[in-house]
Image (cartoon, rainbow, N blue to C red; front, top):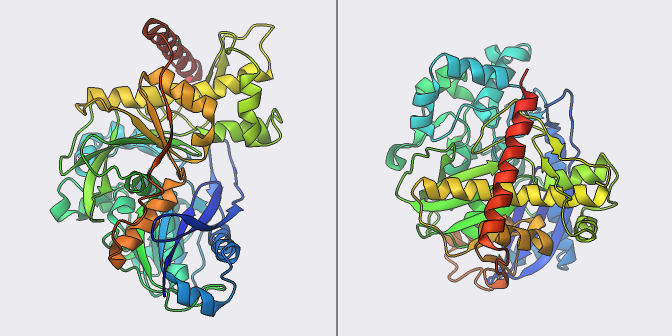
Length: 503
């Protein structure tokens, strides 16, 4: 009897696969890291084949760890696959050969900052925002596609002839996993491209005016399908049986929102991964932000489309990786908490992690990182603590913007993602927000959300109930006046870093 769902979470720094049972309990787990490429300052790329192979290896590892080592075992026990993915990352490939025409341009990449500035100067920002809920920023897929059309020889001509296919990472994986039979995406990923008009969910679609603005032929686009539903069946993937259905797809943050059970208006979650993503579910109400937040498509309780407000921090866990990989301050990411705890404070310093610009509420593509307030006594432990504080302060800025946009102040913040396991960071977050923090039993709710979308399509009732239970709560301890004083100091540091980055 089929009793498991295989959920693939293809992220920015690695691919994770989890095998869930009907209650949401994890029965198998696999992970593979993904190489990063930085061809120029501010540019970030992935080899699309690395994304595929890391995903396949992670899924095989998850199945093997659960004792499912033969295709017969997998076919008998696994009912479906759910996929969630790093959003906005752009892949363009040849329909006939399946070969990418260029490395994937990652969501963090800032190469199109000048193009975005030109579009804003031409007066397109207001209309684009009204139609898509997004801002003109290099973060999104539209200008990445424009760059490919302009800078890769022959691409524009071949795209117009229908020879090429575009996709965010979900579409690329679906194409490969179905042997090229299905070229599709879901509304949550489509809504992050700048090409998809989502101001009315009943009429949401790829828009001709947006396609023309971003020089994208309609012939390259995937079909948009419901997040909970059929995306074809597996064909020719080593370790997976042919015919295994793909029944759930959503962008990573929408999947995390769904995985947290945030499907009632006012529910808020924050995901701590490579970046940091705060999302407030607004249901059928489309809220236009006054503070640079994004109005994006989310998943409703039945796996259909709804709205959410989202704020994005580009560098969160990636700042910890920077301490590890570039500075050698810590041997592994897990060591950052102990190092940060070895000092009582940051010695008055602030770290602004604007390595690839600043996201909401600033949307400053030109800002760059800085460690401010240095004195002779400042050392590696103070830097580690400042990096953690920066994650929490940036999230405070996002929640303030959500509330000021008219969302009710939540009773708690639900958290997930790898860095949510850091107890010091979670206590900082509670202190800086003045709100309780609720961490679920399973912090990998991104993968859980993809699995639950597949479970919804299968008709499984009450799937995931155990995984959504709160495992730990953090109550704020900081005095309000202290909190507000420190918030003002943080915002002065951000302003100083932005000013120093201007020519």
